[in-house]
Image 1 (spheres, rainbow, N blue to C red):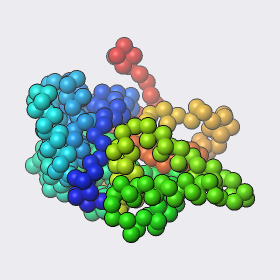
Image 2 (image 1 turned 120 degrees about the horizontal axis):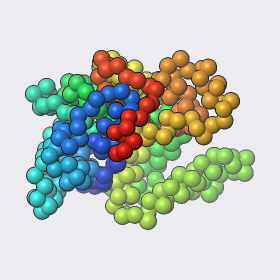
Image 3 (image 1 turned 30 degrees about the vertical axis):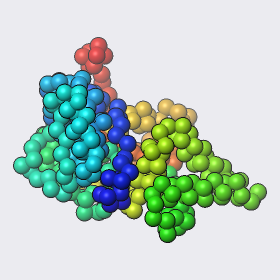
Length: 320
């Protein structure tokens, strides 16, 4: 989608708890890092929309400083108006491209890129990881979310059918309506010998209809900028791990920490996973295969940091 499409139908500006500095710092500490104190830290969000994710953090952490950038001018302007109305002084929202960020933009303890990586061209993806390396403090933590395989092989099928069906429709809301209508038709009309296929399509339609109970504009925006986006590139987790390693970064943890635990599987399955996986990266990849995972929230840190994968909560963490 172009800058104009985001100005016409803005992406919803929500808060995301997994990106909160307290959450990021807690996971980093559990794994042996010494992250910056969240009470006085610097946070950068790439693709901040209207700042809805940063503002609650800023109110909770008044001595920390938050910068958000976004390519959609309308959303930045709307966010700046909210900041002024609320009198929030420790957030700066800037209309700019992340391609323009250099080393002189500053160093940050926490960098957030939620819902950006899979939805931008390859040169922007490379730049995003470059920013995570060059602008991340030595003990900093970055959060990058993206669509992932194998789950997105199935969702990608739905996306491609909707794109085909709506390729000659210019009006964005109408594209969403017609796209969903197609999938509803297919779900209702699939032949009896395609029961599994029909069930999957029905589950997708049910998920989107549930969203219709929310703001109508938000439903249009989610579908338009996510599933019907001009660019939507999923990755296997091991591929993403290789990309960050090439930038001098390493995998720290998943923002959805419980997803890393194989507790829902039988002891036999866990034992087999341990036999197959020779590294934390391989273990996570096999877990994705088992879970048919379609979305990841990956935490990164600098490659030089020695991590401890044996979680040993400190008294300070237990009393927090």
